[in-house]
Length: 390
Image (tube, rainbow, N blue to C red; front, top):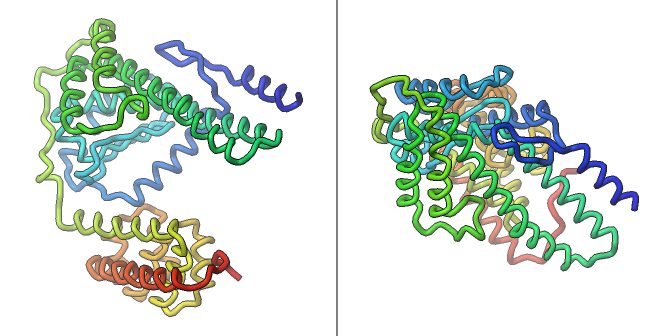
C-alpha cells in the first residue's frame, strides 16, 4: 500500500498543462533538470558530428530559427542553431533550453525557408511543450511500476511481456500524440514567424515520397502520412489566422553538392569507424576483444586501457580514436582529450596534435580488423568471465 500511495502522490504532484494545446501532462523532472540534460546531450552529439563549412547554409538556418525563437517567447532559453554535415540524415532536433541542430540531409526535402520553418517549428515545439521531460517522466514511472511488479513476485518472463506491452501500448502511441502536438504547435509558430504554414503540406508530401516503406502507424512513434495530412489540414485555418508574411522573397537552401568537402567526408568516415568499434562492444566477447586490440595496437596493458576509458567516460570508439591521435602524433593524451572535450572537430584535433586524418582512419581500420580477429579467437575458446579492470 505504501508503494501505491507513493505512486498516487507522484501523479498528483507532477501534473502540468502544455502551452498552446492545454493538454494535461505528467512531469517528474524540473525545467532546470531538462535543460541541463539537453545541454549535455547536445554537446555530446556535436562533438561526434561534422560541422558544415558553408556560411550561407548556417546563415539561413540561423535566420529561420531565430525568427521562430522570437515568437516562441522564451527569453530564458539560450537559443543556438547549428548545421551538421550529414547528407544521409534527413532530420533535425531541438533540446530543452533552446539548442537546435539541423542535418544537411533535410535540405533537399525542406528546399527553402518555408520548408525549413516547418522542420524547425516542429522541433522547437517539442522543446516548448516539454516533451523530453514528459518522456523521461514516463520512463521513470514505467520503471517504478515494473519494479513494483517484480517485488510482488512476478516472473521475469511476465515482466518482459509487460515491457513489450507497455512499449507498444503506451510508449509508442504516446510518442505519436507528441509528434502530432508538435505538428500543431509548429504550424502556429512558423505562421507567427511569417512563414506560410501551407508549406507543411508540401514538405510532408516530399517526406512521404522519400520514406516509402516506413513501419505501420501501430508500430511507429510518428503518425502515418495519411493521419498527419488530415491533422495538418484540420489545423490549417487556425495557423493561417497568425500568418503575416514578413518578406516577399523566399530564400532557397543550398544544394547538397555545395555543402560537402573532402575533409567532411573523411571526418564522416572516421565517425563511422568509431561507431563500428562501439557496436563491437555489444557483441559476444566484443568488449574484451576491443580492449585487447587497443592495448596491442598501443603497446599498453589491457587493464590500463579499461581503467583509462572508464575514467574518461567515453565510448571505446572515441577513446580509441583519441588514443590513436596521441600515438600517431606523439602528443600527450591529456591534451588530445582536452581538445576533444572543448568540441574541436576531428580534422583539427588530429592536425593540432601532429597526426593526419587519413592515417587515423587507417589506424582505426586496422584496430577494427584486429578486434574482429581476437573476437573470432575468443569465440572458439571456453566461456570466460566479463573483462574487468584490476
